[in-house]
Length: 215
Length: 251
Image (cartoon, rainbow over all chains, first blue to last red; front, side):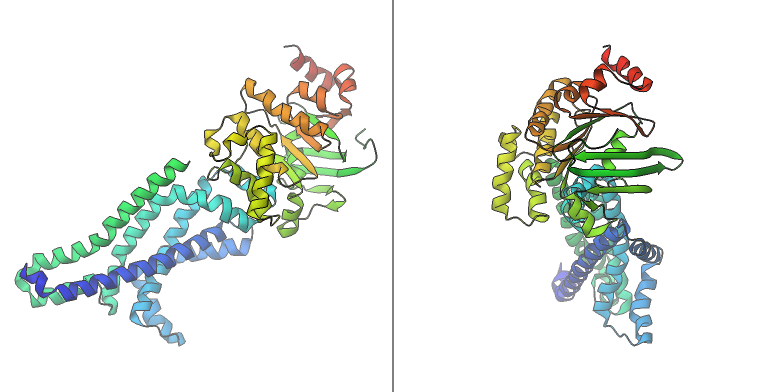
């Protein structure tokens, strides 16, 4: 117990960093991923091509490589970015590809008659997507989106390798300073992640039940 | 044989051809529908009648020919097409009510988003229309809570809320239980009496007899016969129509 009292500040700060990294990257991934999904079903061929290219590039590149590119590659073209925003960007851009595919599967699950009816009313493609298709698509993708976001929270640990003082980065520091308390160090870090992922999983579960009743 | 009767054409199809791959689903279709006219399209499955109906608001594109609504040629895509579609009401076989919206929201969506009406105005008009089709008590329910007949009547109200120039009905009663068919047909007969221009693809011969100004018989992607219901049902000229009628009217 003494270990936790002594190192509370370090663990708390690291937890808050992981939390804000997760929230910001998650927000970026949800917005960009939805936009990409809309592009992938749009009638405009260049938009479809662009979004497909994006998804294939980011989905098939290891996250560590994405980090390298954003934090060390971009300065080569005179675009210097700090470690924390760089981490947000890396995790967000990477996860957006997975969000896109989850949302797209949801769009495909909405009966084509729904889009036909909205177009027949005179709604534009964008209106039909916003008002009719996406709200229904999100219902079917709540569980897979939950998986994507939980995986993303754990993926933020890669940022430890890029000078962001998040939860995983405390592991080597605390272990070196408290060699006898190795298990407590691990426990502290794991609890930190669970404080984010378990409520997230619960929220997904609740959301799933709520939208299921509305059908 | 497919020319207009009173010389005030609203929908005009000229030399329309469409293929699904190798299948020539619409062949040299010429059809003019007058303002206030009720045209019933009948024919065997796969004759192209639904496809014909869906080309009028370009839910199906065509490869050749020209379609115009109220003197305006159908635009290819984009905002101009959306504007034209807003003047053409459509009722589908499978209702296609928006599953995540209440009955009232289903009817107000078009007027609010497309016509830019205020929510209050749109709701007032929607309630009148729901009352007219007899489902006003269901306004706050979701589509899945309604019977098929009720859903289809809501779909008619949803289309009417846009004050369309013409209404397209694509087999509106084919997915309904027999006892629900008449409640939908009654609404459609009322519309026809009120002078709505209607194109109705259906297997309901009773409706064709009672409400149609003209019956168009299709087979194999062509318009085989086009005449008033009296003539069509009593003295069909083509062998194909005679054969079709003998099969469906003998039961």
